[in-house]
Image 1 (tube, rainbow, N blue to C red):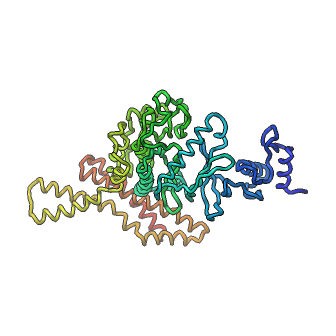
Image 2 (image 1 turned 90 degrees about the vertical axis):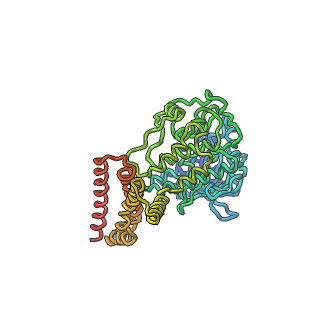
Image 3 (image 1 turned 90 degrees about the horizontal axis):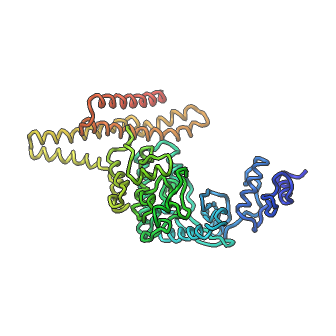
Length: 484
């Protein structure tokens, strides 16, 4: 009796059997792959094999994997509305690359020329930018009349996936987004506007490298997009997806959730448009919601264009100094935003609280030397001392969750002897790290609001402190229980 694989090959080749032909005409058939077969044939062959026998396309291997140019296709990484990306092997340089070419759906109809031009524009844009935070372009070629891009393969995840893997502290989120912002800034320095910055278009490698990708909607900063001729041409039906990338002729260009007011209006975009999208994405990552509400594209567009931002979520662990920086980047008028991405990133990387601690020390020393007195000086000194006390309060868990405590925690879990103990410890440690960081920031913010700024009443202060003390006690109890 012939094998399942042989039966599949012969049946499909003959056009017989249940679903043997790919289409009703029997003109395109699934057989063992040859050099003439397309990448889509390989995917379909694997899908049919998996459906019939519960096997993947790697188990029902083709003797001659398909190629795109000199690159040997290994598997598909993902696809969007216009492009599809494959993981491939470069035999000449013995390395893995990402191959991007037009999606088969884009190869028919009136949009093929526009789609091909977008891919060429993306290639030209990537060739102009050489930066550690931008995916590298290796090669541009043509295979069977289709343009393709060979790019750096980033082994990791999109920023969207990275954020969902586990709880992240605000410092970790801010650092990764600032790296992505450096990639945007490099594109701006090359005279380019990305126009579709979002977490899905940022890759985070397993080593922590951050790279901006997908320049499919890029435009030179001095150019006026053809589809932005008027606001009327930018109408999109209210039912359209907020997360879809809109690229068709006569439609808005970008992803509605992250688009700037000028993109919604159909106005000319510039680097400040990317800055707006960056601030929307960072706000969402830090606060757990986007700054503008809207269940439909139309509702969201109205909120963004009108500048109707949501109030900051209550109880956020993100320090208060970040919100005003993002608010400026989210200004409706581009002229009111930061002059450049570099200016915004410089402020985001510059936590003012360490400076506050230095000012406390220097101010106290100066007062001691001068022997100053008086109620005003005393009030200022008291305020600075209160600020220093708040910073110390935020570090209360540093002794509880020290390097020794981390080691003891890991040992306690591994001591259980279960086969998944080590992986459990590895997954739990980062979660506790984030918890301790968030607790410390909440403690500092509560202290500043109550003791320094004086914006909290006594009842709110007492309730906040009691809640934080309870959370601290719970963590201490957990660690003590494990060590027992």
